[in-house]
Image (cartoon, rainbow, N blue to C red; front, side, top):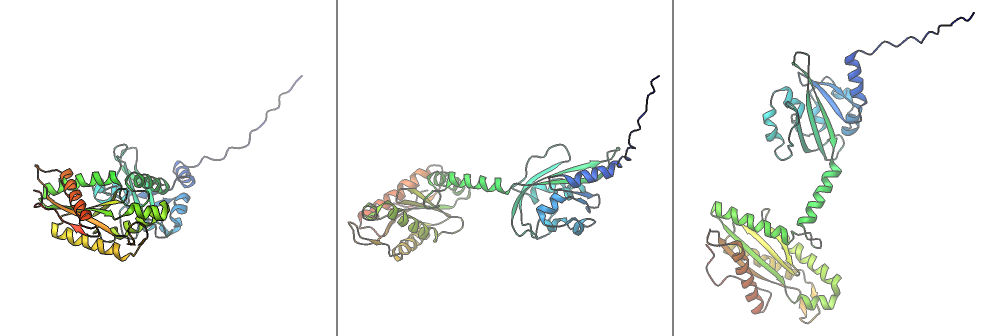
Length: 331
């Protein structure tokens, strides 16, 4: 007669309490995250958040000092805005980095953060989500953070490639055209003058022939730096093409443009770049200036044409000089 032996299974461990399990799960997440209670105090500061910020959890848990991990001055986190019912302020606090939020009640934004403990700025994407009880009342907010610094820097590099001249680092022709039309429209709205300088390197072909293309490139870089050094914060200097540069001077009169042009001419002359080609001496520039009082009857292309004509006259009169329009300013 066969007998059946019953095997006892090992006793099961008691299940974790639901809240404890959630806390442990949050702690082990690979994504940096922290949780605030309804008083904006830190309940959870996971290990990934410690690695990102360099701030251990014991320093912030139970406090409202989480902002110190990301910024040098007080600034509410997205989680704070949700808890304090200040979600409409997100555009003031993150004016240029706000992304479209997901579900109702969630906030999403991207911004540069100083990261004081780490000692390096990082570009972070954050998402804040409310945690509600069974009755729909807010009990906490979880904020996750993603370090997108590498992606942001790659984006900036691509944007610079699209708008910057590869040799000189100045704005390229495309950027010049877009900026000129934007400044023209603004000058029309604000009824302000807009000035333009066209700057051309004298006898550059002879310099290039004598020094080779590498020497020519080095010369252009030095001149580009000299021109850029005379600019105000809202001016734009661009490599217009070849050895020609263009300078946009918003809200600048013709007299003021002439002063800037003369400073540029003198600055280049002081470089004392030797030209041993067909025109011995030092490399110089000729500059044509034009000013417009922008109006619907005129156009930005006319401003360029007038500055070009003035540049041609400067060349014709012997180079290394500036030339102003022979007609009154446009407008």
